[in-house]
Length: 463
Image 1 (cartoon, rainbow, N blue to C red):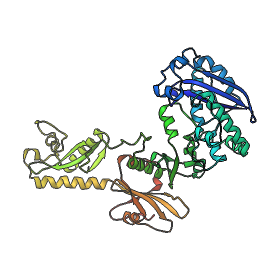
Image 2: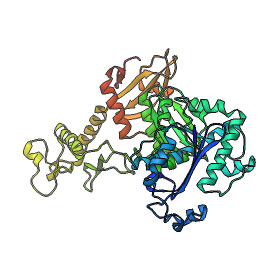
Image 3: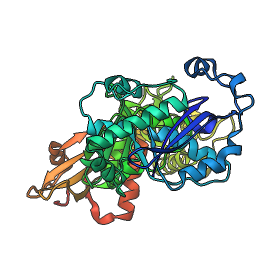
């Protein structure tokens, strides 16, 4: 049995809106066998533009039942049927949500007459209900009313059945086909072409703009998981309606997919990505020369106009590093902005400051040690490659970190032996770097040290 459904509502998403009218045509696959139609009194106001579109105003629903009063009857009509609608995910999301609020759990198979019509009648200029009805001379009584639209959808459904539609319906209803879950405007063929491999995927809107970027260990499984739970919230409903296409980039490893996702989000700033957009290191270690010619070190907020010697997210982390440099290279805590005020220098008291803060040391001598500390810090930052499986049997993936900073990534042929980071760069694409990406790489090599190949200034292990 098929339950052909149409609803009118106060808005475009279920969580914040109510149903104002509902019609269900029960169909046995040959003809309609029963019908249910009613106005519904909403608990929220009907916006003026919807009143103009549907003709349903507050006076019409004043004496209509609330949805809770009819929920049991609606559930009985739907629970053993295939739920059919034109843009099925919209109607289904409303009824599932409001039935749930009334204590009923609706979980049935679905068919979308938009997607079915595209299969059975390809290459039509439009698949809106109104345009399909005009094309096939299906009369609609009371357009944009639940009863009229449900009756028209039932006629369209019969026309689909009469044109070998049963073959497509069986395919649509197969477990795992995805047709009953996919967004209205997304061709299933694009999902079928997705690979079972790590990578990054992109959702595109009607104009081809990227509206979401995601990463996956398995692209096909991850993309399909987006569509299995059609939530009632506004953002979710808008997101589903705006997906018209999918593209992807395969990656050799999940780590590469994580890195590329972050790069692409920062490149395209997609509408529906919220995480990672604002991620950046909070603090940096900077060097500057004061009015007396002394080089000073300071921890400060990240500055776009200056390149930090080192970046970190917590002040305590930076202060620990700075105190280590002070004692190792006899630097003054006052000139490193660790000790503020006019009190006696704690570095002199502890024996590592040579009195530069009391003008007992010339700038040239002191600055030389600051520069040595900066070189030392650079040497502390590692240069290494992460070598892993490639995206085919002929290559290996490579992620390069140079002096503690992410350089780029790519693939190197299996038969190429590389002895330096300089040689690696000929095979890699350079990308922007940030603390988030560095953190991903450092966490990975801690868990998988066998994937890390370290380079230093004099020697390097062959890959």
